[in-house]
Length: 162
Image (cartoon, rainbow, N blue to C red; front, side, top):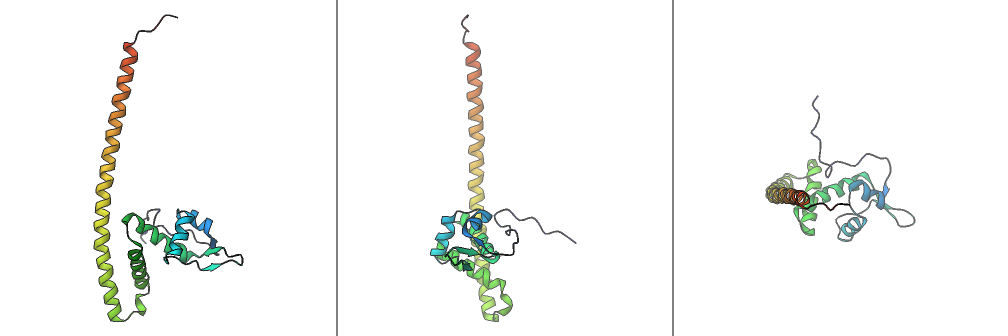
């Protein structure tokens, strides 16, 4: 029996728990700010499954999985409308067995388009990451040159007799 490949932390499912969690714990578990969760709720991307009698938001495991999907969209720089569309497609695909043939074909075609867009965005991010790595190397070389110059300057400076 083969083991599925490990998922990066950003897409890993939250640990399973039996009850819903309040926004603070939800934010902590998914690695986002409370502000982001509230904003996504205001924009209609996220709706907590329930609220306490005091009005506090409660997030289920399904809600947290949805948040992780949204979080994975952030580096792609998608607009809110695109995020809503993509999320709807993902959710439609997860219940593909109830779709009509026509709807299934439409979802599949749109998902294919999103795969192309996502691949292009990943390539762009990888290029930018490579540029950032080059900058870090250059900074390391600059630091090494500074340290060498400081050591040489210390050796060249005569010490005063005490």
